[in-house]
Length: 381
Image (cartoon, rainbow, N blue to C red; front, top):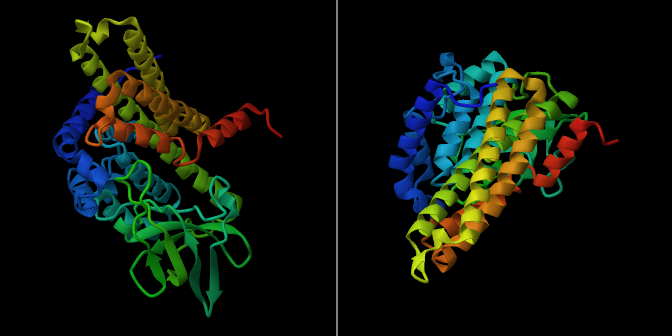
């Protein structure tokens, strides 16, 4: 069994890392502080052909394996993990549209997604619909042969950066469906200011309220998919998103390990580098081992998405649960190695520590991942 990257994948990984080093590293703190125009930033990423990596060539994409998207997310997250949340929403939207959308729906949106003119965004969560995403109350009604959407959605990633959104809502028959909704500013649509949060701050997550907002006649994804089919579509998008959050956690963990290792080699206490202390050596050894395990499982999930779809849901849940746990625990250990130096507001490690905790919650919590794994094992009712 081959567990290493191919030469083409290694070359792509180097390309992504070069872009991240040149374009993200110098502005990483500004991205976290929201002192960067995010629309301009993502447009530059799109111009570099990095937002359409897995999208079909007919829409301007590169049609590369999903693993390449994971490698890109990992590279970006070594400097700014919040970008993984934006990428998770964008790629999840594009993959869902490509897999289930009608020809008209794909022709309307896919090219602009590939070029970075639009970022994909989902509106699923509500005040009473979080992990229980099926408990939504947003409603699509039909009046005079026209469709209208009413409801409020929370934590809508990229909502202020995109002209289109996939919204999970009920129809008049109380059936759940995914609807393509234009986010054009109007009296029927309100996008709030971005919400300050603990971590992943470079990802915009405003609330969106629809006030009898008009929809296209063919706004329902797939044209006819409601009920169980729509729920499966949402879960497919979440599986993609959680795999990319796992990739972001891997990138974060690698960055934390590198910072801790460098500090241990250079920091002297009691006349010698602290790297000579077994307590420090074991922390770094544990981090390196956990990182390798999380990376391999995340790559496995990416491979399964394309090559073994029957395993994708379980692998996605496993890699998300493990990689985010590693990121949270090992960023804490890296902080322990750095001591007070890592606590400073201008040090990236304190930012990584905040980001890692949010990763355990974003795109379904760790507890939900364990429940999904248990379901796959067949040990739940």
